[in-house]
Length: 423
Image 1 (cartoon, helix red, strand yellow):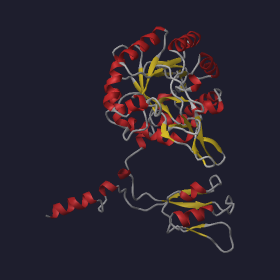
Image 2 (cartoon, helix red, strand yellow):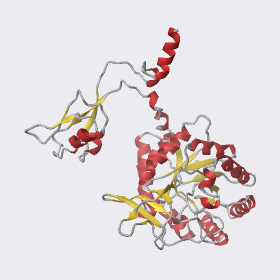
Image 3 (cartoon, one colour):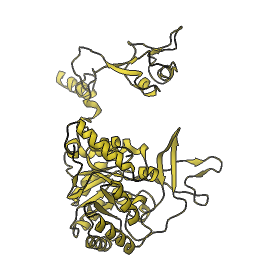
Image 4 (cartoon, one colour):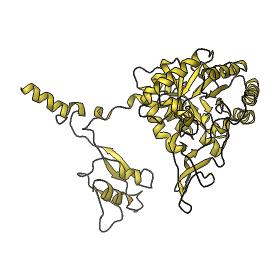
């Protein structure tokens, strides 16, 4: 049976599933209940100079029957005093000494960072997470994503922390940036032991068309907030892979963004993470979801004949390439299983109006037919089909050698080289 125990940059935990910094990790009561349910670690709700929050704070984007496909919040960091938070954190660590307890923090001044780090180490925390990602409220004050978006400032503040921190330091990166690797490399230069990503994405999730007010409403007004939940997973996976594949980046990664199931967690790990953090799914379904996560990931590792999470980490990231490295002579076409087809003809509509007109309708049948000579293998029909495995994509032998764009004769670079050689 696979061993889920983790050692993340020197921080040990019973499994790779941690609560992300946020409302579920706000009090001793919550984190104790989380650890009892099976979570391996928790990143405490961000410490700092206490703020005053507004009401309401949350909004969501639902898609058809999927509630909270995307979640938005305009809640800020802790509204509790540092003393109250430290008291609660100490209680948690005393009751669960073998679980990872991480202090998330956000300050303006060097002295404030140093003071909080020392106080947290005195109560026995296992590490720190520097919040450089919050995209609302705090960034207007020169903190949060305002730091994560500026590599020089990211490096500088990280170096401040490393002057006094005796426990491992994780830098939490903002996705509200053009190139995530610049921020990751800045954290590495500053001396960080690890990074976590992604934090929430700047967003407005919706508008009440009756009142024309944006959500969430605060006395008829609102503010841009942080977007998270299942909808952000593709963005998180891409950014994790970008760091994993960068030749100069060497820090461990804690994956965050859209994790609800063990499958989501496995995808983050395959892209290069070695622990994962969850917030929105807990707010939606509660702490006990971790039980299916740990069982599912353990079973998956067993099925792959792997003994630990680290064996899984980064496998898929290595298969992610630039478009110019993909084989242009690889070919697939669609195939419809007539017995499974329910005759909705959605595949025909999608291909006819939105793709390549490669599906035909027959006079005496509701089952569409693939025009194999026209099919370009775009996958659209299989994606819109409501029936599982009704439309599959079949490999076609072309008898052509592998050809990538870098080597294609129509590539302008190759044309220019050929012209130069002729001269």
